[in-house]
Length: 539
Image 1 (cartoon, rainbow, N blue to C red):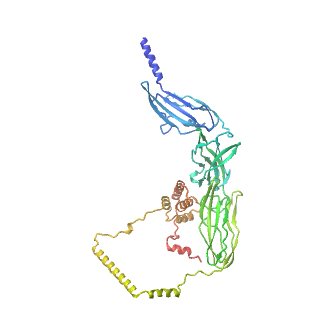
Image 2 (cartoon, one colour):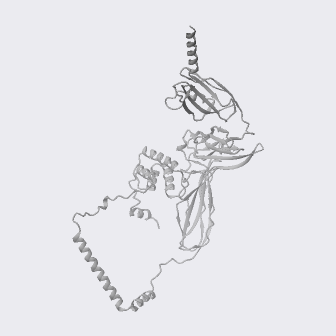
Image 3 (spheres, helix red, strand yellow):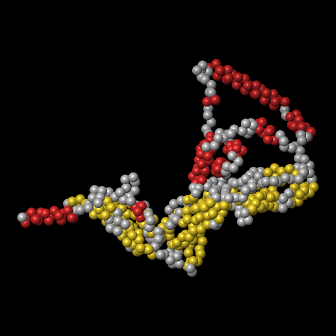
């Protein structure tokens, strides 16, 4: 009887020792907001493996999302031999970042009929005046017009040395996704500033965005993950900015510049001469999307006696933490047909002033020029002296020289004829001439250019742009993609290829959804007739 009792007691002790255990733990119970705590779930003596990710997850960590932002969970399992018997352990660890201060509770989790313990933690407020690291956000505008540039920024303040700092996600916008809007990430800039009497280093990260719809425009700035040199980890949460976007007044010209531009010019040349071209360069700058400035300055008409040959704009972009500035250089080549004094007209560029809500003009005043008389340039004439010199040279040569040269040329000609005759008579009858029609020239154009040309059904990007603009006058998606691709292929200023690919693919999708009407009377720009038709009315 005693022996049976000992066996039963031993069995119960063995079962209690090797029974499955499910527990939860944290590395600390008190912390400041934005600091992480390490949460662990451990299952021992069980064949079940804990999984928090994938389609077959058995731990739902989303239950913590009301009070915490979660890092990436890490799962592990091991099998140890203990006293001759195996012990299996499965574990999940994840960093939790409190969203607010106060007393927070991590709920219990359940698996295979086992429940983990609940955990209470205390989250303290972080005093900005003494914080080692904190973040501020903002934008240059609280209210904007459709198409106006909005600059949103994050300022990372730190008074301790950082081991690393990185964005945890990408910029997001609503209701239109950021990928469908003109947008640029500005170069990061640093400064030092006093805050509450303490010197902080500040890293500014900014984005320029151009809203395209009226109503509330929301910008969600990414979170920032920071590790200090001493090993402290911080996650600075997402920041949201709401901007009221208003519709532009009716009746404004298409593609008007939104935002006050500046128009400057190089000093006007002083050496104008009759029948000679003189170049004058002007620069237009505006806080608008890249390459949306006009190709030619509008409304320039020179007085009679002056001819104007304007060159298309040469674009360049200026990026800073304050936003994007698009600039275009215009070269005006002026040819005076007569000598005398002339009055160059004033130059005006229309724009929409966001401050007043009205259209306005920016311009340069008219200027006077003086043209010096000058003869029409003539090609160099063939003079009698040049002819006589050449004749004398030929007469001074000995007579045998040309006779010897004639004999040599005759001999070479006869030798060539003999070789050609032998080659023709010895050529194999099976030899076939090469069919040049089957030789294909390799297309060296950029793959994105090939796709866009195929979608538009045009030979060149410029031809496709003219045809599309004539049909879809209010569309900017396709023209922006074409201009961005042209700048990427032919300019030294290139945007990242990922952004270019997104623009081109969006444009192709838009083209595929639109029926393109072929211009019946538009001449082929590669044919000679096209040149004559374009120039037949020019003087």
